[in-house]
Structures are given as structure tokens and as C-alpha cells.
Image (tube, rainbow, N blue to C red; front, top):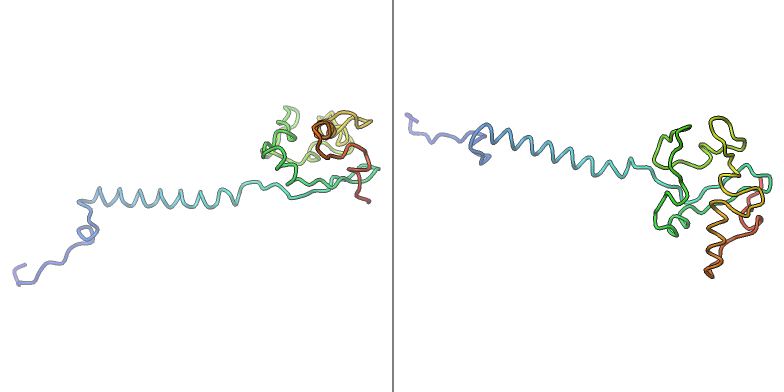
Length: 155
């Protein structure tokens, strides 16, 4: 400077970047990192979370208190063990849904399977629940196999 003062560095010079392109790249990297950080934090929060337990209602014998967390642990978080893939007649809105979202007390078109039949046949001799329970008992584990052992919730 002609007056003898030392010139003050510009912001660009203070940032350590060589030119405007480097500064723009720094901003782009910062914005991308910010977006990824928000996605990592918000993703699990927005993800569908399974209930700890639910009561399956609608059966005249009584409702079934279903310990979802216990069953989830037994199958190793393999949701499709019980939650089957969507059928073309009624596409799901989420990866897994409540059984009774589609399987109602009375099957209404386009569904062909009512709620009871979604869990077991009329005599509870075969079906998604009883098949697994019988298999567990055969392996020496404790599992309910009689109607009144599952259907315990009144009202």
C-alpha cells in the first residue's frame, strides 16, 4: 500500500482456499455434509417403528394380546416371517402393516381372507401362528397351542 499500511487479507485469503472455485467447492461440500447429517438423524426417527405389543380384537373367544417385541426377537427381525408381501389386489402403503389393515373380521373385496383365517384355519390346526407354535413345542420350547392360551383378552 502506498501509505505504508500492511494490506488486510481478504476473506478468501483467510479461508486458505486459493480461488473462488475452491471457495464454492467448500460451500458445496458443507451443504452436502449438512444434508447427509440431517438425513442420518431424521431417517430413523421417521422410520416405521413396530409396537411393543398389540391386542388383536374381533374374535368371539376373546382378543389375543400379541407380544410383538418377543416375536420379533424370536424371528431375528425378519418381518416377512409373519408379514407377507403385498398382494396385487390391495397394495400396502408401508413395508409392513398391521394384519388387520387388510384382513378384517369379514373379508371384503378385493380381500379373500378374513382376520381369523389370516392367523389360523377354523379349527386352529394350521396357519401362520399355530404352525410356528406347534414347531416350537416340538423343539421342546414353550408356546401356546390351545385356543384359550392365546385368546385371553375379554371385551
